[in-house]
Length: 114
Image (cartoon, rainbow, N blue to C red):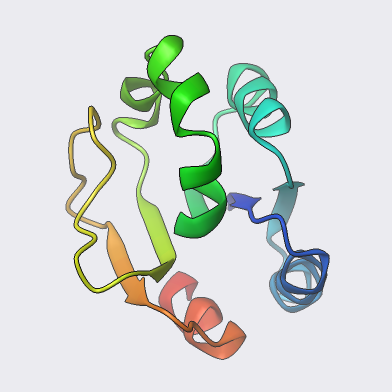
């Protein structure tokens, strides 16, 4: 399984890479909007683990490039989501999407991926 992790927190990225790597999962990490957009053009992950706080910091650039539709058909685990969060504007929901409210524990993320 190919998983893309998008989170600006190095601690979270490292913990997810270590935990998921032990399960024979290929993990690619991104810490910035530019990295995320570039990686999405170069790869086709089976699942995305996306920190909502990190995503929201790049909203203007995603809107400018109409980026959200590129995430269609890929299941996304949205974590650290505020109470009113339901999805990314401009992206179709996927039946395997999951929303984990803030604060999200690393073990909660790992269990959703398994």
